[in-house]
Image (cartoon, rainbow, N blue to C red; front, top):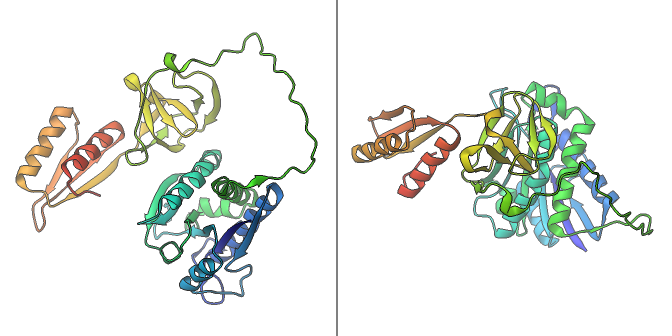
Amino acid sequence: MKKIYEDAGHGLPNDPGAVGNGLKECEVVLTIQELFNAYLLANYEGFEIKSTRTDNKTFLPLSERARRANRWNADVFISFHINSAANEKATGYEDFIYKHASLASKSLQNIVHEQILPVICKHNATNRGKKTANYAVLRMTNMPAILTETMFISNPKDAQNLKNIEFLKDFASAYAEGVAKFLDLKTKDSTHVIVPSPVQVPKEDEKETPKKEDLPKVTSLGDKYSFQVKAKQDIGVYKYANLAEKFKILKERTVFSVYGYTEGVKAWAVPAGFVQAKDVEPLSVTLTTGGLSKDMEMEFRAFLKGEGIDTELNVYAKGNPSAEIRVAGLDLVKVKQFLDKKDWYYK
């Protein structure tokens, strides 16, 4: 039996968590936890679940949450949270593992995040990405652990979604599916009837699956050098790198991440498919360096000129010399790779 230890963050009477737009974090995460459990119980077997709390009359210190999971020898730990920010425009989904996480925790995060991506696309949400942190429940647990932040309670639009049970069900089901895949849980067979698959006769107008060698080469950026883009209008997502077989539409102004590109930069590789590069606008990011000497500045400028990156490098000479640069798309990738190669600090 696999052991799942779940943690609905915060809890009354001591800690309501984030509060805003008529919602309390401690209440919303309990609903997510209940939906998470319902999905697992309906679809999988071979597991046990324990919780830090199942009501709003219980509060456990963070160290006690981790201690109980460790004492039970849980196979996985998942903590549910709702985000908040002073700026009500802050929006989107993100998840965290410990900053010095094990390979198992990294695998858990990758699998859960992959399950979340279609939900993010479905609800036109912002993907803030996979992150690391020094949170106590991640640092003090012995097993693979992840903490999820389901949108921002401080954002009116996000809060409206958080009041929608179907919205919460989509996220909770994705979390459950991710944990089930990570633990390799056995799928329930409720009918015990084996139905033979009919022979599939292809339609005359059906296209054959392109051979791998006939598809354009895709250069991968990975998580580290991925960047965000915004759809200029309603755009198609295609199954193959040659932009064949459109299978879904992304609405205008949808923001999503790019993880690679094809030769000639005709298509961006996105979660589960490809989009035409001309249909999206890369979003600019400000990078700030530290400890930039005069020689380093000259080398930086020479690199920008050589790469044809037309953007301003703003240098601040007072105190610890530093510089800011605002770039987007593949220019952002080139600058990050240059700074990493030189081993210069930036954020």
